[in-house]
Length: 620
Image (cartoon, helix red, strand yellow):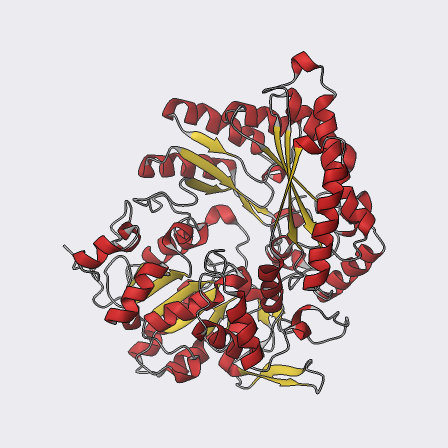
């Protein structure tokens, strides 16, 4: 039996000790001797990290190699964080309970800007120097990947390597290079040189950046011959030819996504101009139906989960969705397994399927119009008309639903008060659609519950809006108050509720989404000011962040409230994410012209992703 890193008296004092014990169903046990040791980290609490599909895929992928032992590590919750500091307990991996500083690699998935200080927490508690420049021959190689790696620059000081693209592509090459370098007696620098020559891998130390007097970037380029000027995103062309976990990890405690997750496709055909995922995960690629059926059966058999979820940016666009859901309904009915179908367009087919797989009386339906007016939906290329939204609502009410959630964004480019008022007007029309049903035929208790939620728009890299300014605090508050008042003016306001996000978190997300290397010192200062678990409202320390910017003499407004010129060098311009700058500029201009671009199946918009020679670009 393995020796636990935490003593019994510590485990009895902390909340949810099962977060730190390991030993879950389907965890991997290997003799670490002679193997490359890889600690895979999700820099948030266990319940969030265990719900992340990417970690499950990489854990399975790396452990499929005989010469690699991949283990997991998550951010210790605040109670254990305090104990580890007090008792000087080094952060450890779950499987072996060995300190992560003794591993060869620490791989960190970077999902969200507000987990950046948690990355510093992991390094600090792990006894690994925060700055890559201060690491020695015996320290782990720290490698980062995930959506935020598409602008790695705010984190450049802390990582040895960034992995740009999908995990199934070049990890084998990286592990082989590490073995070869070790066998040859090579140094850390020698290995990083080998890594820099592998497509998709970015070694920040091998690049220099210079700035103009106004703070914009003057130049960015490699300082080693081994480092390419452009980092090419790596893509799996055929998703049905690569590994997918057949025995996913099953936690002992309830986690956020406590179910089998079946990824049916990657990418999206829709082209919403605010959506980074829809751009960087192009092209849209589907998994074959037989592949999905086989993996659904194997995962349900190996886990005992009572729910299966289809993972996709837009499940309705999967071409064989009807056949897949028919199969799952037949299979899951016998097993008493529920089916979750997120990311569906609300149309007749989707409502029919949902009525078969969920309890209509208990559930609510989610629509994401994103904007209240048709003009604004055309600006963001949402591809939804009011007619389609209201028909979906009418079909839902006819099908037995009487609770609807509507998601919108405030602060979108070119937004006017009329566009904001349109949100309240649309919510009112959805409620009105319900009350147009004759009294005796209305579902539920005869009343409808329409919940509208707004988040604030954050411009992201590799989107047509990467150049636009983000609203100021005062503008966000004014927009929120204006909409709140408009909601109360509606005829059906008693059937309507309005929820909103706070602007402070949005501002920080915006700063780091489009930031550069100069923000590294702000992250360190914020961490020292006690800023961790920032995405958890009970721990969010806005004052600590503002103090950090002040201490570092960094003007955050430069990063968040400024319109960029189309010819400015952006911090992420050295990455080729598939979508070309020419395409993004074209879409930026079409947004201001309020012109809709058809989805990828209706017609190719020439985004540049045909270069990958797969997926929707080659369906015909």
